[in-house]
Image 1: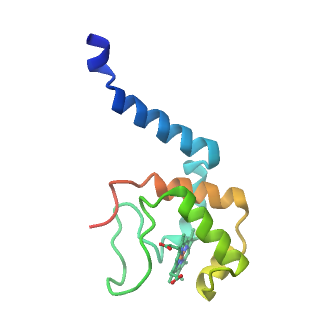
Image 2: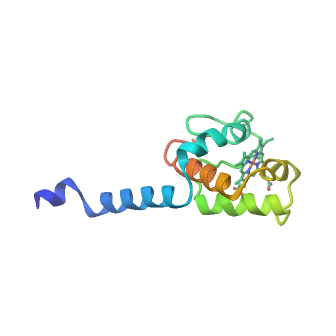
Image 3: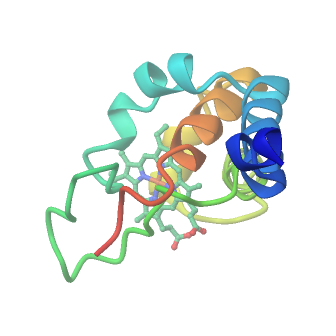
Length: 112
Ligand code: HEC
């Protein structure tokens, strides 16, 4: 009972899931530095869009796998967008995973 109240099943489950996901694929600490150039266009934690009417998608809180997939598609040209092709073409898979881990870790802090 006491142990259960300290460490609810859900809380522990989330902690394990978050740290496991973040460090298995990408490192959010390294990703933060690598994502510096992206922040001018994509809103990051605590930031608002520079141009509210601009159609730059929000990345904070996005699933890491979605971000990695999108970057791979922009790099290969499968998802055509000249701006993002230029941004993605210099990234290695590790860079993408680190950046994705960083943006995914922004859950609850961005938006609104
Ligand atoms: C010059 C502005 C600009 C910069 C810098 C930029 N992006 Fe983007 N990004 C965009 C725009 C505009 C789109 C929407 C493109 C489209 O319609 O497919 C986009 C789309 C994306 C998407 C797809 C999001 C979705 O919801 O589908 C991802 C992921 C992404 N960018 C990641 C990055 C990363 C990582 C960086 C830094 C390496 C970066 N971007 C730098 C403008 C930018």
